Amino acid sequence: MTYAGLACVFVALSAAVALFATLRCGLTARWWLTTGGTIAVLVVLTVVFDSLMILTDLFRFDESSLLGVRLWLAPVEDLAWPVVAGLVLPAADELLGAREVRS
Image 1 (spheres, rainbow, N blue to C red):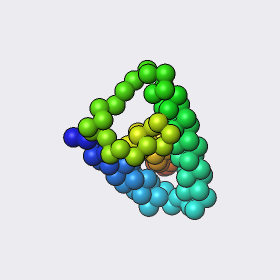
Image 2: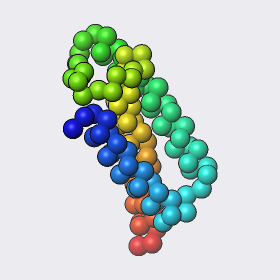
Image 3: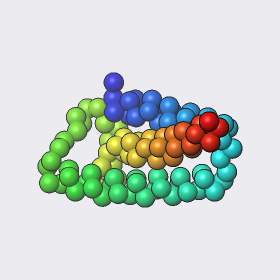
């Protein structure tokens, strides 16, 4: 499996969790704007720090498993993980918080 294929699976699952949280907890546009802003910051930080780590040769990617698109030195597939974290963590917080309120 390629990095992009694996990333797509996790992004789809995290989007499903966020959509479920939206429907279950009635999340508003403000929540989505805040979550989107958080994801944007995480993506920028990932590009900067991944590029610096690649530049200093701390790790390498199997080039045959990459799409070839890069932002600075970071492969675009590596940006899926901040998107996943930015969607799942706030959605899980809302879902778990909603469960505590009902108890």
